[in-house]
Image (cartoon, rainbow, N blue to C red):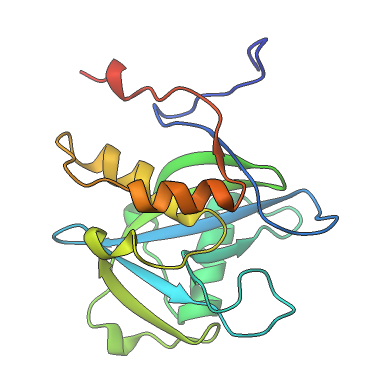
Length: 188
């Protein structure tokens, strides 16, 4: 059931109204995975430099669109097989939250970074790399993934001295806006 104000809060995470810069985009559902490691590190993909795709050359989470009849969990597992030749273990794949963008509903999952990385075969994008959260704020990222990672890091640690001030100003320029109030204060 949707509240009268139109905001939906799921899993105690902030629901976002984010925007992707596109002309006449289609509404769709997307499944992405935050690959996390020790010491607040995440694995990201750098997109190709193709000017016909959104956010060429930017760093993003691994993921993609749901196919007809597919669940978000199935899509996440399929996309990781396609993009990294990685079969995700179902019991380790956790739903982090559901985020709403202007053009898509994003189901964000978490999964431990598979080591060694040399066993992964990147089939989409230029390269992949592991970044500590302190470096993410300086990355040029696409699809408002920086805001989603901000929510992830804030939820992952109760004491967050890390600030995304630089990232927030860039996010606002890209049209990504925070729409709802965070539920972090309601945690026990």
